[in-house]
Length: 136
Image (cartoon, rainbow, N blue to C red; front, side):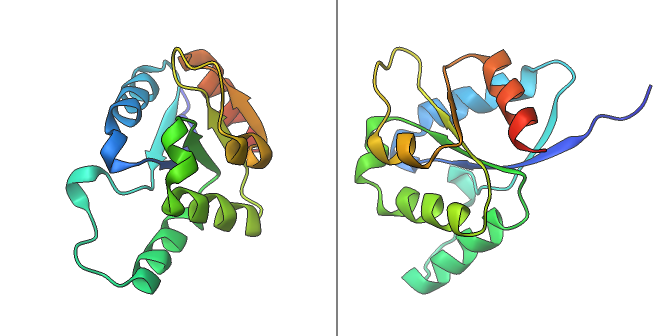
């Protein structure tokens, strides 16, 4: 059996609202016939004490090599300068953006609606299918 293609993903998240991120990681890890590498830094592996320009350089380095930037569309994203920076940088280097509407949410923040190449609901099959489409 041939090996699976490994999708390189940057999965944006707010460490203050890490539950949706953690749940999405569980979904993606459990998806059959799907392999991915997460280029974003998880909560426990933070950058430490860095200046804002240094943090921006780190984020650019995480986003540059990915196939798709994934943004979980909770309302907290409207108030996060970092998530806005990630969206703007991904767009500036033509990385496709996948917006994920969290489970039970009826709205997606305007910044994500405007930037996303595709928005899907809180469903593993929808997420995986969209990643495959956008990574082409």
